[in-house]
Image (cartoon, chains in turn yellow, cyan):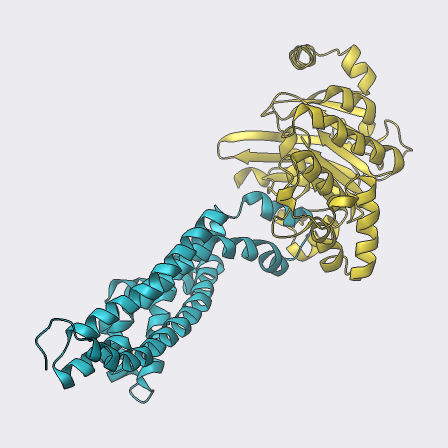
Length: 288
Length: 215
């Protein structure tokens, strides 16, 4: 990967010369706070297709950030990079200021071994568009699997927590059902409970309502709204539900061709966007 | 001797021998299938995750076994490779290894059929690699392979007469032996056919039902 070597090497803890990073970090948090998520010059290519070309942005602790933009603009890729479902081709991704997938050692950009990645990955959870529940397990088993085998909780403790979460997402009575006996909306609520069971500091929501029937979308959004109100989990969401984005998030980033073209609080973004590209996009989306 | 084509006395007379042979046939199939199921999975896993230094030789051996006849392998093993072992043990082993090479393909397909999202969910939950295989991927993959396993079991069951060549007295050999002693082949051989049918047909129905249910 030839372009990695000429990436910046001045990537200590200080943001230094990175443009835009500083003012984003300090938008609404105190000076010097370590951002929950930080992208530094992140590059991602799929073959010849450059999806992210030196992306910089950061998300403060407890922020709820919505990524909007046309499909192919790199939003989902950002979530997948954070979950290590994709490997970046350059730059750094930091969680709580700690390099997560790669680091610079001397002049060289090296991959961080799986063992160290696992430590950081524990802080990040993800809910997928297609739910991705494990069909060979019951609802409860889906939720306690990782707490028992990753967090090393006792089974009893994991079950107690799982039952709380099932209550919270309104799925208590389906506790012992197989996942294929559930509707899409129910599966997604279980998937949310499963992600929360790991007590993530950061929750990634990747178009979580896109595969659902319209009448069910509200249920799932209701669950997420409650989580947003009752926890201080940092959330990064990709969604086409603009109303939801407006209610839940405190920052909206508009993406196009792997670049942030506009960034604002939801109110400004949705009522008074400045960038031409954002106006077009919002007009197209809200026309539905 | 009598002059009718079918003699019921002969049929009754040979039946105990054939049932004894059927027992051997079933044992060979069951043991062979257990070996094939386990070894096939191991081959599939090794071929998937090993380095080239492992996958290339394994692939060569697998191809070699698949491209040579079972009968030749049986005789070769019984006479030259492990002549000290009892013929039935050799037979089970060879059947098992032979079919393991086919089962490995079934497993491979079964593993590939597990959606990518399952792996991704496991990563998102930070499940260790081993746990992902044991708790998430293999249960689903093996479910996918059950019909294939059933079909190969039937196929193996029907190939057990080859054990005749290494002096295992399964059903076919029992019939041959009876025929050689009494000069009546019609009843024993017909009944061998019927007994094979009596076992494999219901099994095949079961497999078909399984296929439908898992589809």
